[in-house]
Length: 180
Length: 354
Image (cartoon, rainbow over all chains, first blue to last red; front, side):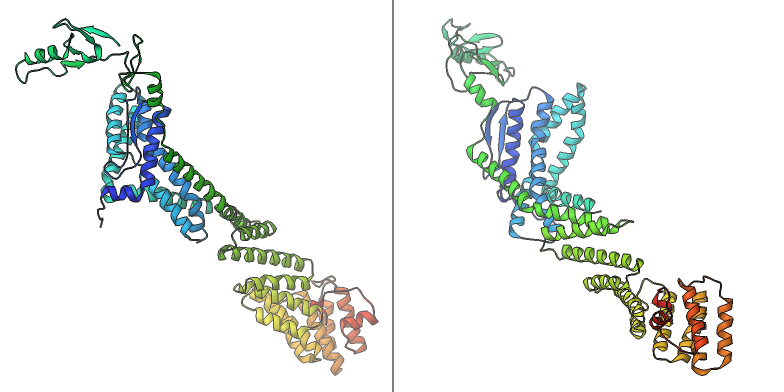
């Protein structure tokens, strides 16, 4: 059974993820030389953050800007959670410090999924690129579909499940594999 | 700033205040009357476009005279505004938060590094222990290092104890192979004390202690050790029973209970059926002859001795044969030590001393 918590409350509880998400959009805009007109890294409202930028001149830039949070948030989630998962899972050492790090890591991980706006841009631009024969465009379509499903799944906490899977599940799998 | 002439009324005004209506340039008033000339609701979409003055920055509004500005996102933008748009600055607090997160990751890695070390050392130790050719020395050092890095883990401490016990046990087995059963007993005892739950280690320690006792002519103590080890040892039960019978025979010999010595020797021969056990029967019969003077014992002993091939299972067959013959010829029963001291012979193992 799932229970509904208003989005702004979730965003407030996991605010580091919102900040990293928007920072990732902004960083990829800067990397791809795409003009940014306005950015908000966190606010109490909907959306909790945003980056307004010009339409990129090519599909690679669109893809990177849309998927930037997915890459950065996922990487940071692993980097933060893995060092504290080892003592917890292998040696059974639990403490407040590791809990704090897990909250930070999973908060960042659960905001890795691009927003519906990002998905619709990716879908639209991906189709256009695919029609032009751009292989990235073709590859982006199933990705956009998957992310759309994940977005719908937010209602049933799929974003939190993703964060936990990356922050807790992945290190455990890796440690199991290393221990085998 | 660009100046344009209105195609409607002919006035000249700044370009930024003019509108493009279907390709014609109009001032605001002419634009309004042009649009109103269309029937209501039939104004084509996109008919009216504001004229963009490419010499005025769309962001800061600065006028660059006749200089054409670069276009960013379809708008004329001056260099400084362009730099700001293309390199939108991260707010200071976001930069500071990024530094804090980076610092936390580094701090977390640094403080948890010992767990990584401990994990990989413990893994290496387990690998060494589980290998088909175990490297107990490396396993011991790796497990000790792991326990040093993660002293709060009972599991790792247990691994270190187990690795140390395995090393002591393997060294004990090596000592036993070299015939040093005293050292073998000490080392396997250490292993057994480290892992008291492993009954086989305890049993093997008892067996080595028993063999050591037999070497020191303490057969009764050896019997006790072997009996305690029975059922738990890696050594097959039949071999352990043979050791028990041999030690019981030795204890009977020490107690000058020669009928019991003969019984044990015969039981051992029945169990093993080898030349060494037959020689022990001959030894017991010789004792019985020496004690009772009955010729039947002497005849049986000599018959067995004659039937034994030269260089039988015993490592010192000639010495043993000579001792039995000495016992028959002199009708005196002396221990091996006494025999060696008086008659003189090469040393031989205690397991067939009588």
